[in-house]
Length: 139
Image (cartoon, rainbow, N blue to C red):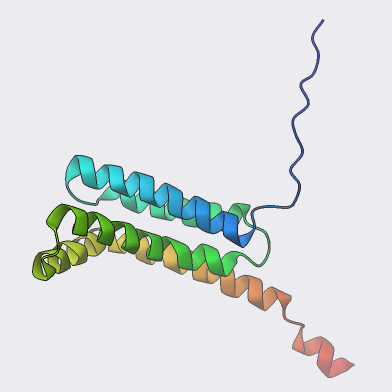
């Protein structure tokens, strides 16, 4: 006799702001760190992870978390690359600056695409929550 396995129900409609921040930062940290350690620089894997976590934050976050979903990936990426660069180059400002800017430049198209998507979704949600001007004019 086969018995059906009952899956646990989720306790809400999605991730809260804190959950979005933690998951996005964690995945960016892990994949960027691995790519920079293996390849000695950021590249397509880091860019794809940035795009995926931005989409995941928008798709799996509750309403009201779109702002956090748009802002967190670039900040998490910049913090991860800066920490990795300081740990690998030491405290030499000229070398750290060049490597940090090069890392940002290597994923710039992905950062731009994910930022545009995240901000579009945020502004779209904000516009949908605003009352219509036509309804106010006729009332």
